[in-house]
Amino acid sequence: MIRSSIKGIGSYVPDKILSNEDLLKMVDTSDDWIVSRTGIKERRIADKNIKTSDIAAEASKKAIEMANMKPSDIDLLIVGTVTPDMIFPSTSCMVQNNLGIKKAAAFDISAGCAGFIYSLSVADSLIKSGQFKNALVVGVDVLSRITDYTDRSTCVLFGDGGGAVVLSANNESDRGILSTHIHSEGGHDDILKLPAGGSNMPASIGSIENHEHYIKMKGSELFKYAVNYLNNVAKEAIEYNNLNPEDIDLFVPHQANIRIIEATAKKLGFPMEKVFVNVNKYGNTSSGSIPIALDEAYRSGRIKERDLVLIDAIGAGLTWASSLIRW
Ligand code: ACO
Image (tube, rainbow, N blue to C red; front, side, top):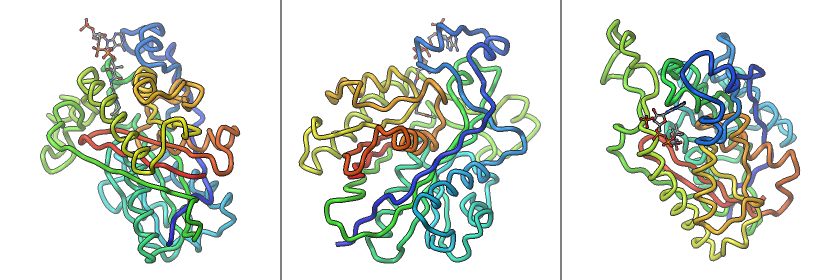
């Protein structure tokens, strides 16, 4: 049986830091409120000339190098993002050109903060089908471009960054992506959306004046869905693989809010030593969140060969997803 496994991983975040202290000069907030409600101390912001595809390409180069491959070895390229360079062509085609990947199928996936795991799931299935051998799977967002820095309820939460993995076919039956589970439930655009810029509300002077090109979120309503759905989809992965929570070596959840992470870990019975957290440094980077966290966990020695790693995420749609990986 063909499986897919992670041969390389990399991430990239911009150098520029936006700290809680910086935000105090922009909106009516406090370091104490932000840290106690979210766990975030600072986030990264891309310079004006940096596009989503640039961050994706930097992360991808590291992943391809670690996999000991050349760009030409990649035959499938999927980018999970909600902040594409432009509506079309896809950001994956930009990344393809940037990296000099000549022949590959390339497309984007829009699944909010679950974008990376959705992309991983699709790449895993296409590799298992035998159609592709080496997939580059990217999760990346430049949320600062769609964040309203006059809205204190959202602007403290988001940051920029991305990560990538090289996923390759292997024949080891117990190694690699053991499972993916993806779900969605439409009808929740009232709690999380970017209203303007699409066919529903094309750009106009009014849409700009009304700040409709920025993220609108009802955070406390989303919070309740987040804890329940993240718990359910993590359990689904554990039960599908006939495992118990104690078998998991590291839980790497979507980095949106420390209170969501802690509440989900508690429901699942994971002590916080088994949970990877970097939301304090980067805030919520949407599709970038999971691959950045996975890369940091791996490069800091928190993930070792053959560890069982559980990832899960929830985002706009609603969409939510999990994957269990034997590293
Ligand atoms: N500084 C100070 N006060 C603030 C701030 C701020 N930055 N933002 C909001 N407040 C105030 C509100 O105005 C409100 O005041 P009021 O009671 O006088 O009206 C009060 O704080 C409480 O606001 P809530 O929104 O109820 O605060 P809550 O405890 O729910 O925390 C938060 C807000 C952090 C957004 C939280 O709800 C959250 O994280 N939600 C989930 C977001 C999420 O999961 N996103 C992930 C999926 S989607 C994605 O990643 C894009």
